[in-house]
Length: 289
Image 1 (tube, rainbow, N blue to C red):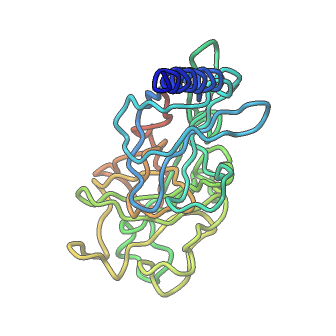
Image 2: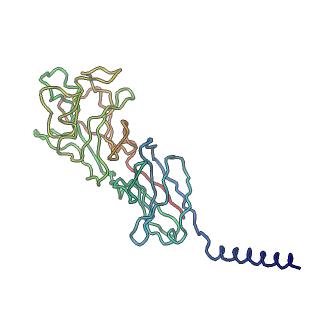
Image 3: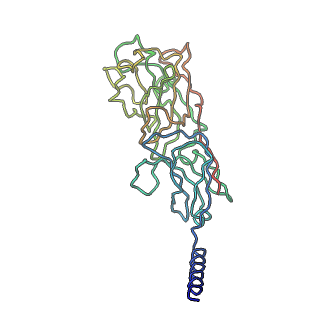
């Protein structure tokens, strides 16, 4: 009899505990990301998703792989009440629980889906345009003018900004590039289209006679990387303007490349040349809950 009573009490205890757990389960829902065009960030940075609930960001998790779809378990109540999804680029070791300034995709939920894009949060490059000239103003030698590129327009007789690009938010910079037989070499990073770029005074490639005009650009005159020879001739090379995360741990162009152009074989030095659309002007995707 004692044994039967003990078993009955034990059974009641188990049922009570079970009911208690059922009353307070951990309730989560799945958030699925289908994003296009993202590139791997390397070991120093990760992507992190955020949902905006009552104006506050709540992390949905970090990821490094750019293969999609990817699914994350998120608090059900938070996900149901979320109005917006945002994707940011974060340090891999990040003591700050808030989103970084470098936000790359965003979109509002409509029902259970959010169409996300880089247009509204990085910039809309749909109408961006650019011009450049071939010149080497940082040295006193006029025999190598095809070895430099400067993003300015001198077609009116006076130099003005050659790029028409939107002002970037915090966490982003523009960067110019010349692609030498598949190898991109930077012209420097910049935020203003009508001012010298960040490496104007420190470039190892420019000449020794000065820093060049007050516009983004570069002279490739010395200290060529292994496999290249400077001075060179940029005709036939591809000029690119990309949008880069800041800070940036990669020596290669980021996925957003709003402007690009192959320098014509008959290009004339000191004459403004029109750029064309780059290969990636926006990033998009779908987020489902």
